[in-house]
Image 1 (cartoon, rainbow over the protein chains, first blue to last red):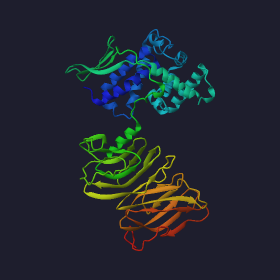
Image 2 (tube, each protein chain N blue to C red):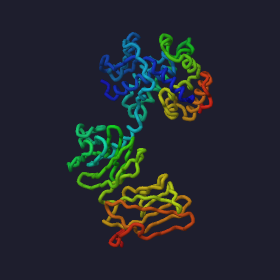
Image 3 (cartoon, chains in turn purple, brown):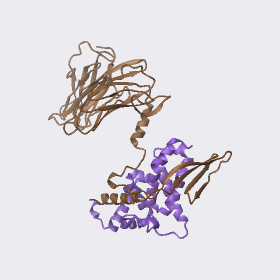
Image 4 (cartoon, one colour):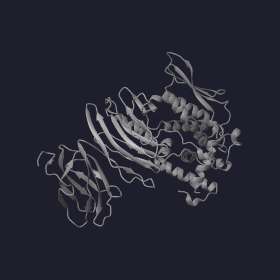
Length: 158
Length: 342
């Protein structure tokens, strides 16, 4: 059996990673990507579990796999519906979903990590594989763009 | 509501509404002699299969559980992650061969003591004292003393005791010997008192006493810190202020040639938790420095083992370096310096 640490990790992280990737990359790519990310994690568990933040590692891999999966599709659907067509009717806040889908990928990932997972800029940078200053720019531009698209009061945008 | 708050609320509501299939980790097949890495997706069962080092495991999502009802946004649990505090705690495992015997008393509520330890043969996390496999300790009801009672110190380490009342949370932490520190972390309002601690090392007993009472005002703020003092050392606490009584922050208090220094907080307070004393009464010279102020020294202050000494300092911007002999600590006639001289 995989060791108990791995099982515990999967049990506590799976749903959160899945939701994060669905929000950032769309449901069509998310399920495969998250499954494969955890499978890869299993093969590397001894090493990755020694990292400071294995939770960030699995998100990085899942988001990268989701991005590659979408890129491989010859006729990529525009990200008009991040939660999947079949489930879209039951999803709340269509305006927000459309606005997030309209963001560039990096800004979308930064927005999801920050607002959905409460990640700090350093953590976002770690997941995205960029400098904290770059992540901060993505986050800033993303929420400014979202505020415009959603007609929110822009005075408070940091 | 700010843009940040609106976005956070809406993104969370959206994310929480996304159904996630239940999942489990299952062994699929076990083979020997094959070492390859393969990933297949069975679309019906959503099963990711990994073959590695002759073993096959799967992370399988079960799709027949139906949609997961969205969680209430107000009660959304935090995202599970490895908290820095946990890691910090794990790092403290490096402190071994320590043992803690504590006694204390609470007033106002029931509380329990917890301890943490790791021994070379018994790695364990938190132990509910008295119930865990890794020893042991004490639990008490309201107002009842608790103590482990002179047990043989094992080759293990307990260095954290926390008290939890039913409503408020207090925490007392004792770090490694040589750098003892006790702090009380409070949430809410109440009173709490630690009466005595003793840290016992294998083959050596060193009594430690907490001096002072932690009184919590009506706003829950701590009004006085407890200080532990080992029998082979003394502690010094005090306040550094200006001529007009204004507290000086970031003033550095040092003694003799030791590298152990204390820095004043925003209210000018400082504590040097442990000053090892060679003699029952040892003469120690303190030096206080702050940027923009003349330095101040008190020469040959007598410190007594097991005592907490008060050392209040007034710094001036105009007066040159001030050296004071003995004062303000009284006594010292039979004391010697650390080098043996009188």
